[in-house]
Image (cartoon, rainbow, N blue to C red; front, side, top):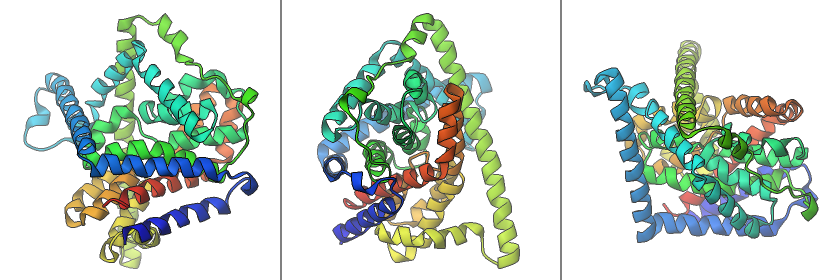
Length: 397
């Protein structure tokens, strides 16, 4: 039965992508099929083989340990407030991001991450035949995040076409920053977080091939240059440490502020809907997304609750949705929990449109205006990418 739901989900994604495609005649089936088969193989290896289970277990334990070490720093500053017996989301989940940010800064400074990103990007280039820059952004977005990734390609931004820019932004919006992966693992099953990160790289490129197909001449393909390299050369090791600490703090504070605003707003809307219509706004969203949940193969008695979480992620952000999901995950089947978890692991939401637009505009005003023009289509495409990743996982649950 899983294969039926997978094929139905695949058909849904392709139909919805085809309907809004910029150039349907240029859609290339071969690279799409190659990436789809790669996704299926990787999902099988990570979920259904002993090697995959051990690997995910190791990664999960590594992030759990890093979070514990990060909390050690929090404990020193806040005097053990996070250990009073009541979990404090800001102290236990968000502030350890600072420590993870420092580690990423060190790996970048030592040229370890750029090396990994470069060679994985080249391998993807051989698989899908897309531009080096597209594959570079797809891989690096999964590590650096949707805003930071454009800093590493700021030289190229001025030269990319509108079509290429859409693909780059879709990858950025479909990814997550590795700095907050540890935080995700406190709310979702770690194995689904790891699987989602891998699958989203391919899903974003597949959807971009559907909505935004184009031919790229070899001579027009830009060489991927690590634009951050010059900056790193100007920074000493301890300057880089200080900058990474501040970057991590900014992420923690921004996420906290967004949670305060969005959760309060959601509570207000729920209150008004309940007052007027005798039903919560999230329940209404659940019914709207229920057909998508059903096509993904979620049991009929769970599609409204699952749809509500999925829609909450779209209209607020993934953290708000994950917190809501954490409260009901124990009441859902393993299949539903896995599918919804993978869907939640991305930046595909309305607020991210503004974040990406602002990040690109800060580096190149003209290109930032282009991103703003296709903002809704960008959200549409990245949401389809989340659906596709969830469908792949559903095949093996």
